Image (cartoon, rainbow, N blue to C red; front, side, top):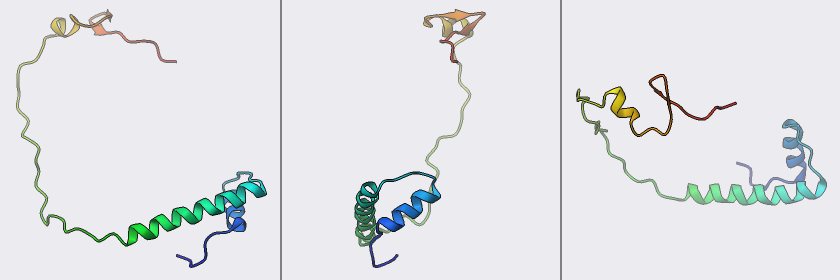
Length: 92
């Protein structure tokens, strides 16, 4: 990472790459915000690493076949049904 914070010229360059128009005032403001963000990353670099468990263990249970509701029982609590299926609002 560079030792100098990004300036308005770098902001305008990135904005040009993204095809986003920025005014001079916005470029100045964004340059300050970018400098703050980069400072946060430097702070995160100072956080010590924690030791992780060497071996990961699968904590999921095995699948098991169990009885479930039949179609009529499942649809009993549905506010609307149509042709033996749940009916929901139209999405368009």
